[in-house]
Length: 75
Image (cartoon, rainbow, N blue to C red; front, side, top):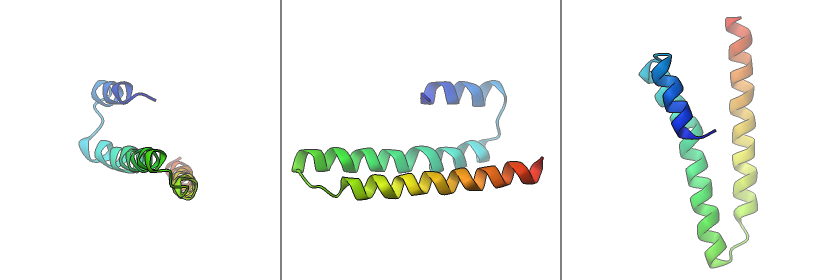
């Protein structure tokens, strides 16, 4: 999802800054690090990017699992 849409949603629905910042840190920064690493290795020819993508995928699954448990808890 484009960051512009997320920012519009956060502003329109008056999302508090702390949850917005937390979501940004957990969502955007790891993705940016992975894309930068993969891009660098695409230029240098290193093959470690599969490991990095696997670790990132695991990170996404863990965050999604925590989110699902949180939603069940507050429901």
